Length: 122
Image (tube, rainbow, N blue to C red; front, top):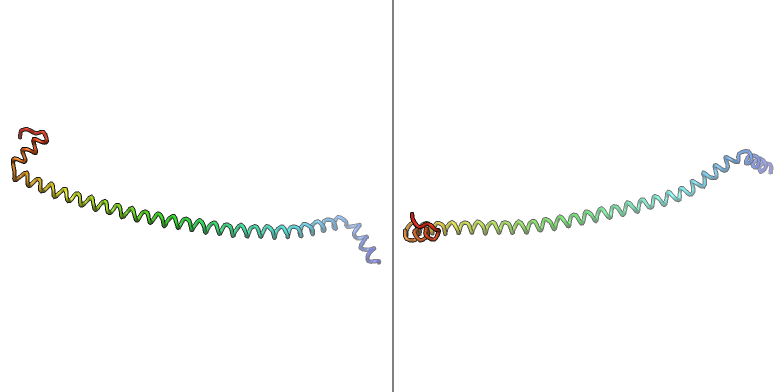
């Protein structure tokens, strides 16, 4: 009983300390729960970020693959067009060579060609 009276007297003298300690204890307990919740939210946000980053990387890789495929197809088409062009130029050079030989061998054809162009006299 003496201890209770001493404890009561101490509480009356130091009531501000008791209130401060009680408030600090309540803040610690609620803060701990709040901190745990914040930690869980941070973990969820980190996991979500990692998933989004992985999806972005996957989409970028797929896009790069499609671009490379299209570039390969277009390069093949360009090579094919260049080959057709060089074949056509070679064919035209051969025709030109044949026409020149024909014109040199036949002077009448040369005169007719010049008349077709608009040159009447040479």
